[in-house]
Image 1: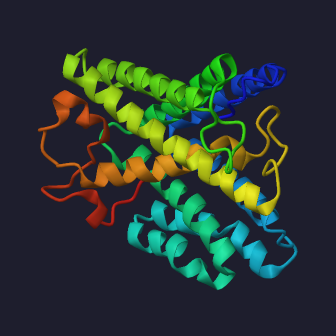
Image 2: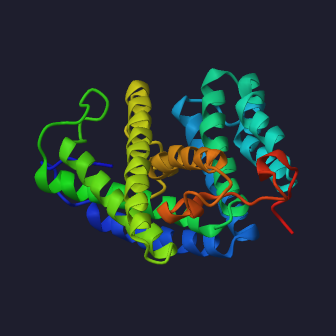
Length: 292
């Protein structure tokens, strides 16, 4: 979310071109799932861990850093075998051996990866929760960008990110709410309550997305860097592009795990995040595999 009404729109063409390349590839992998989705997730995760290590000026030739770069993939391998709790321990506890800086990267990047695998393969709606969060995050970012550039106004948190404005923040929430309402309402067959539920959940998701964006901005500001990388024209690095999605993925996956297993929230769009069950148990407690 880059909101500076005083600046020009000169980076907009690059952002559009990047989106036209990234979005179709991502949607293809999300829709077809299986190894397409897992492969894309692995590539993005490794790219983000490389950028994370570079942020803290860690030498990639160091064997501990080299292991850190593929650490999320070890957790994903555990997930593929249905070992969800070991995977969570791999990204949340074991990385202390890398030190606090790299440990934090493992928690955020690896945790988001596990969350996306959970949403894609362990929810009853399968691809739809992932598509929902991707589109809502894009809407939040795009509407924030447009509103911030158009209206400008007071800065949101200038000490963290001088370019972000309150108008951009509100624009992002409106965009996330509208898109969330449309997606959930459509998936639930046009129930008016689902449109309301989708709008509320979309806005909450938009808030989490903006928090994730601000946290990465604060980290970069403290480290004295502008972008985590330069691989994506108009956006910077992979972390710059997916910072909001990291936090949103974890948040939405946690929500899906605590929703009631019955149908009580279906009319509000709760079916979007309902988890698959075996018998009367929720799958998080069962060693299910995600690849058949």
